[in-house]
Image (cartoon, rainbow, N blue to C red):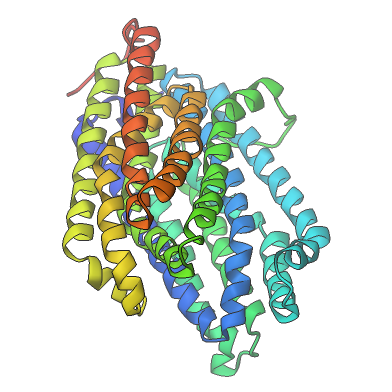
Length: 456
């Protein structure tokens, strides 16, 4: 089998080449989320509330599908690095099987749980009805996002991130185009309102999923998928979830952290809660490129770990940290120098500016620390130690951020609460460094080449 570029191409060029398409596509995804909210808000404020309340369940779909695919991605890249074609094929087939199972589970939740969920969230009948309609469509047809993520990760695992970017962009653009058409009934299309927003979302996911399946079939010879005599392999599934489950939990932890932070902030004012919500939307434009870098970083490290190439693993790690820190430092400068302009994108009131300007400046002090911690956490996932990432995430967000914020709120007031983010990231840096040293001693330092001819 011919040597994959992940074992031969110069590391810096390889990492940038694999990551840049994912960075661009994730930035488009971040843009889509804001544009989608703008269109929904034009229906009514209740519609925007309904979609906002649906978000935690949609985020859970993403957490389960993305977490499963992270595990599949790492194992698939490692198998290719080991030149074990049978294991690579089995990993892809079992990953697809798990994606289908996940979609079935969420479809059942949509059929039997969407209404109960919304009636437990709001006493407003119109919000509950609109939310149930929106969420039920997204859940029943969630097979689109599972297919999209699964087949995109197969392409990423074999180094074809440019093709993965094409599928993601096609889904996002489809969604943005269909939103106003389906919501407001343009060009002779029936006016569907909130249901139109849901159908536009799932149509975008289906377009991306179908394209990803087609491109894998035609353009990805490194993985051969066959359903003849297929049966679920429990060992492969356990290995996938050894990395995937911590990733799923890590993404779910964000929702828990946000809930507790909102409880702390609302004791001061609802505007403080709004500032936190605005921050999370704004920070996605800074963090998304780093997460795109992760998608290129993980398969390179996993492949070279399978190949026993210690030098390329560490070159990739150093390059990843440098790029991530540079991106996050640029974000820090933007948040420090253009704070008011960022808030005014959301029509910020005088009160929101008064609270938000110092808040964003304080929170952004954590950015460069976060860049280092994110890449190091990705190193853990690529080497099959996803539990380390989970430990750091739980410690940072639940055992540090929330308690520190609570203490600062009572000791020094609202202006001090925002510094809890920086404190939490410093703790995260300390933990990830200790765990990285352990990983290096136990997994990386003793690696021996497995016949890979290196070109650096």
